[in-house]
Image (cartoon, rainbow, N blue to C red; front, side, top):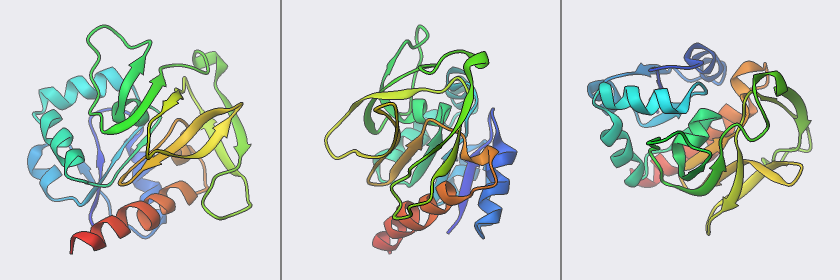
Length: 198
């Protein structure tokens, strides 16, 4: 399985390190030819409007949307969750997303940079161990569509969701030493989806 990390802006290196720790040899994706070479994709945290704009500049915005539509496994953290959402509240004027995930997210829902925090939360991957979640100007999910599974919440707000081949968290697992989120994406989302295609 070839996993790419969209490397236009954001915490790309941290996701690369987390994927390597899970036994994956990831690659960076900036161009159409690089996107063609990967089976699954990670959308990193960063600035969602900037990432979408740069995807258009680099000519891969429509290609990513098309790959989502045909079932490419994708994991988005924080800004990546916003980029996967079908609807964005408090969006900047003209803000775009790749879409595909039937959720409504609110940008910066937990507050500004100074309101960033860490918390140990349950994650529905079959383990009773809490997972360390880092929230930085994080979104939360305000509406969950049919077929979307909620995997983690904070104060009743969904902060980790999945629908078929799309998986998103409003927190940054790549900023911790706990690789369960990346491992969940690889083993529970991407690998089963890709095995069905074979």
